[in-house]
Length: 236
Image (cartoon, rainbow, N blue to C red; front, side, top):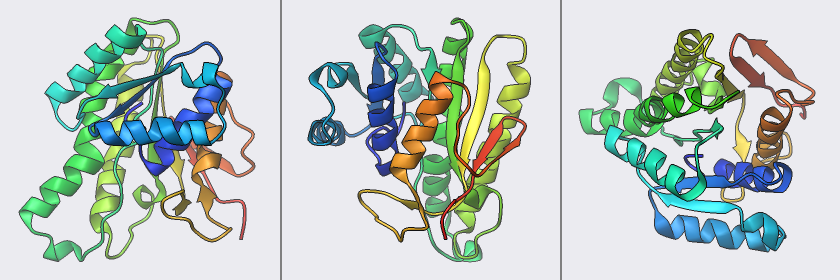
């Protein structure tokens, strides 16, 4: 998965290692030091040695086509062909939309949308060659409603939703399932803890593991819109 060393990605990796038995989990990041810290935090979280042994660290920058294809090649060399691909990419940005300069626009859109596009172009063809492959994007609720003073996040997120819809339509009949988990609300992570009503990164990790293992989840507040599964808050 891409973005594995982020606050949400870390919990997705942890859940997959602990619940998807005998599978290797490829953690992709452009920062080697962050992958090292990820492995250390997984050990501190109490994962068994056998579980942590299935973690494969790949250094690649999926925000451009070359880096995304490097990620595919390295993942294949280290762990074999992919059965599941998960991009958890992007972050947050704040500012008035009409005040955005071009370098800022390019940077934010690269981090929050183009990286998803290049990751999909590299990994979906890999999944087509595997039986019952799963492509599972991770997105945010800003894609569903405009967020004043965070407009680029909403714009990039909405583009990501359409990317998912188009991929789902274009891969029909190939055996690949394309979905996106849309986390509809702020997220409490290890790095940015939030109030009790926020969805937590650990809860997202468990829902992702549910979808990988069973294809469904028991999360109590969810809505399906085609290939989109919207995860609403349950507290507050």
